[in-house]
Image (tube, rainbow, N blue to C red; front, top):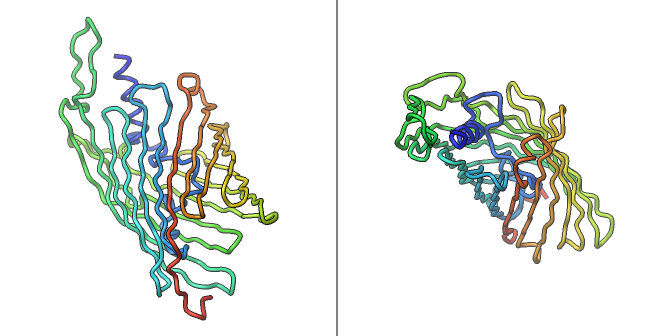
Length: 314
């Protein structure tokens, strides 16, 4: 019975059958892949980028949440547009979520140094529960039958949409985005309730790159998240880069009520193309007493620039 209760709690965290929780994956190394939460980023770079995010949460828990995300995005060679997409898979015990999203963005010059990109994203989300993995009884007790926990696999698919804007300069950037715009209900077994409704997630992010000299750079950044019926969540991060190759940093996650996590991050960039990032999160909330932290790995590749901007936009 204890295992069943634990799996049920984890499932609620992933599928968010209670609308008061965040429903989208969290990333401690968001500084490496802002496209995950803002489709407008697809129109920003001069070359294509590929990023793979893998997050292993609450080490030491059986059937703990695992998030795998693969994204690719980049510009049109001659037009001021960009496009990309993300494939994601989350799992926690009997619960899983698969999502596929495409993004389109267009960007224009504000002046000689500042540009603004505006993007939209469309896709779908598939939720799945495998009732055969649920343990509904305890040794020596009668079998428990829960009508909302079927003993066979069930799935449901929903459309998804997002939108965002992104203002950027050689040294700084700022963005605003909204994900899960449709607010659909996740319906299993014919149950249709607002308790299962997907909530829109709002993001504000920004950062600045200080170039100290030819060897050292400092990049502070922040990410503010808001979901209905939850307090604001702030990720405050910063990294120091040496010779555009080695970097290290720290990320603090705060709900404006208490600190949730502190993350130590390290990374390596090979010839400006291959990107590797690793983060270890220590959970400061009560649940941190029962796990060994969270590991997040980011692997990426930056392709050669293909952009030929019109003379008026250079």
